[in-house]
Image 1 (cartoon, one colour):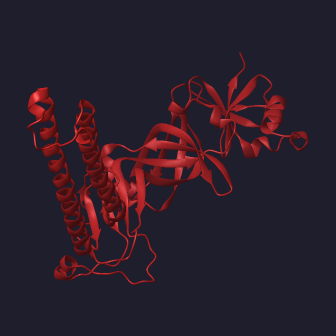
Image 2: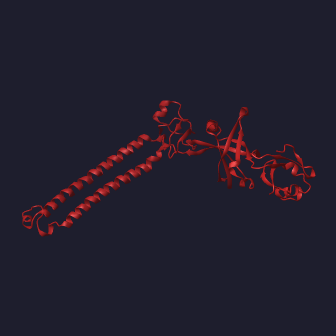
Image 3: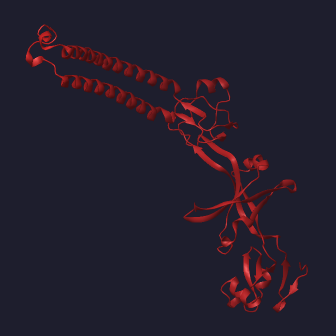
Length: 341
């Protein structure tokens, strides 16, 4: 490794860095985000009961709150009573048809002579046939299908109306209520209503299975580099840092356009710290691990080149000042070059 700076044309200086070292690409605005985050809104502003414990880790589908629980129970009782009445009516009709089927089946089992003495059916016009059994069976089946359909439809109507009133965790994670809650435990248990003009999010669910440092990498040249050689860090109080290793990159909507967002996974042991940092903005230092020996050139010094004003970009200027090198990284304050093959 060459430790001394080397002088180049026009008084420019540069320094070599050995392979395996990390180069600071620059400092970027950063956020801490969890694996998932979901804002929870109430479908209606009714009597709220059955609150979960805030700040506690909850499993997916755990109940967060129930709205108008007593009214829901009343509606359930009304539905079940109505279905019970329909069930009795349909079953009574089916029992009559089954009794009629037994009569027809008995009649068809008799001989021609015996049928003359049967009093259930009189006259040739009323005499049952084998098709009569099929008709009765079809009517019994139809009644059963009508009953099943009615039960499913009533249950579906009830679920569509009342399921949204039972608010549940969308995934396993931590919960934070975003509205003022009664301090009195008895009032919480009996139920309370939010002010009519309170339009804030009721709660926020945070999937704490993973946390990430995210930055937007707007430099087109740097976005072509190998992602797994990137790393980031955020300075914390008392000389500590929060580190992140590359996890993924995604195109996300930002303002009126799209942005390339890089996600850097935070170690498990720092999850508690990361959770406290949610919602704030930070500055992250982005580093890149170089593969071979590279040359680091100050942008400020390179801009003093006599022909700098005639160049459209850094690549043209490097071609003039360092013709045997090409750009690897365009950092905030310096360029990282490598020798052409």
